[in-house]
Image 1 (spheres, helix red, strand yellow):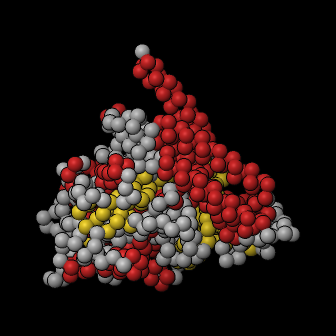
Image 2 (spheres, one colour; image 1 turned 180 degrees about the vertical axis):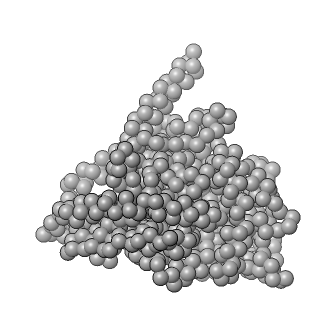
Image 3 (tube, one colour; image 1 turned 90 degrees about the vertical axis):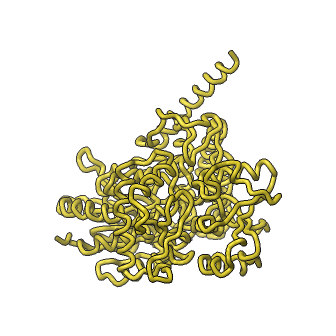
Length: 595
């Protein structure tokens, strides 16, 4: 059954586009979902940049699945639970691991050209936390190959339409009796600076992670937590935002003062360690034996904290990843992209030279809370990929499980959301008409006569972004404490108030009518503030150290705390409540120490 697609409406100032499914994001999660629902209705894919730009494209290592006779689904499940520090949802883990092989082979059937062995079989490598070789890859550019195939398939589908360089700013919700229902998104067309409203029976958030709340991140520039922030503002439930994964090995480059706060760092894939790469400190000492019996193949949180400890102990700027003991031909076959990048940019030959590395923010393990079918707490809203918290990753993501999660959950969400669309299409029509009418009647701000202040406003916003990132790295980074988290909460609040004052002083709303990039920068900064607060509040709610979340106040795991951290009230209320709780707890502990 195909859901009918409503017609579009537009006037000089506002455009309303009615469709059956609107997808925010064009990575593996959004594209694979779109391809699965496109036979049931019209699909609009809204993407902030060009179609292929996003985290998927930069995934180097691979996608894991049980495809070897010596491997087993049970082993993959076990590795996922161990890496997630036993905070994973067992049902989610069992589903993804069991259905992973079929999902990956579907990509092969679509035409994905993965690296193969001399016998013609898919070459399976190994990464940290895995007991077996189960990583399917395309040399060290796996994400680029997957993105290529999915974009080509989506462009060829007659029911899928891309809206590139369109920035989603908010979810559209309506009150349907006692139920708050999501019926689309508001968007800015970055080419025309026009506001557009997409109204749809189903909205899929696949907008990626939030790496740019920190100054160093491997995430692309578009990863500013837009999907998570929009969902939080719409009062959808958010979970496990304290678990921000720092990749142990991003390329360290000596700062020259020219880098901006929008830059991303270059990732040195975990597969380098999987293929035998060893970590050394600046003194030439191999240090991982001091921290974990799994050595360089320990989960990412362990390796990242170990590097962080080494840097702080010795006052060094970086450590070194060394794979020069492996055959040069083998290194070049496995890591051609990394080798070329380091040779071209730093003059390093990875077959002979050590690679300088430091931890960098890499993956958002929390997000919009979903069920096993990608469904959220808001009817009509689904989420998948890095923007979602499905329960798969728990307290730490196992390497190469992220691409797999996007594939499997897109299948489940496609089935569930198609049924939802069929059941609610008729009822949604009247809601759509009201939303379209409300949007079309909005009053537009008049642009100011003098636009010279746009450049100044952009600089001010960029400065606030830099301050926010520094605050989050210092107080809510790899190692945390109650004192630092409280400080982060106060500083983020102060910076948000500063933004509000600046908005009033320079009339950002009016300036945004003449400059789209200022409008986008403003919305991105608001989203970064929201996500930062979600991270801080979630971290303060967890009274233990588990997985990626390590706090000096509660350095051990506590069985009673082994549950997801869920924010199911407005963020402002959650922030006030947790501040009181933590302050009281700190006071009690001080009294115990003094007595």
